[in-house]
Amino acid sequence: MQQVNKDKALVVFSGGQDSTTCLFWAKQNFKEVCAITFTYGQKHINEVEAAERIAKIANVDWEVMDVSFIAHLGRNSLTDTTLEMDQHQPEGGVPNTFVPGRNLFFLSVAAVYAREHGINHIVTGVGETDFSGYPDCRDAFIKSLNVTLNLAMDEQFVVHTPLMWLDKCQTWALADSLGVLDLVRAETLTCYNGISGDGCGHCPACRLRREGLQQYLSTK
Ligand code: ZN
Image 1 (cartoon, protein in one colour):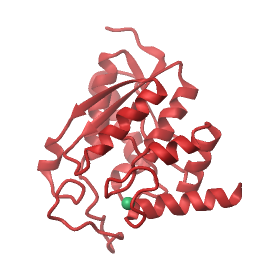
Image 2 (cartoon, rainbow, N blue to C red; image 1 turned 180 degrees about the vertical axis):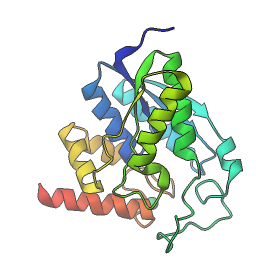
Image 3 (cartoon, helix red, strand yellow; image 1 turned 60 degrees about the vertical axis):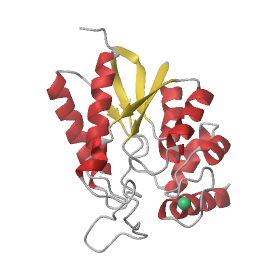
């Protein structure tokens, strides 16, 4: 068995605001950080380009993993161009931007990857506060999966979720405290229409991001 390196963390990294903030959080909290980006048939391949660019700036090892089977399992508006994107959370359900199983698959693959690299710390940017009703962003799910992953591989993984209880305003504050507010603002891609930085301005992700930023900047 490989020796577990407690100084090393693997970040599940999309190149968006949240996971980029987590990447720099990890850099502050662990001696060594690497990042993994998943392709799952997203409409916008520039997400992956953003991730690559930021990983370079952050000077971390970075790898892309293809899990595009996820897009074929269920319909969602992030991978299916024929589906019009829900702008709001429908009553009693999740918006069609929900990719069923996404975080389950991402974290499971990340854990196998981490194990192979002797890493037991895994960092993900999911959070409950702005989670649009996505069940796989909830704390209970992450804690449950952490136990399952440990049992599945007889390992002692620790899944870190630094943004779990932060809203977007507080996530901007965290980025600022890590010294990367401008970087996160300029380089990350959160927009559902695939536009970096401040984005298209009107999709749900852009609205959430902008409102959080305005709120944070007004408190400075
Ligand atoms: Zn947008």
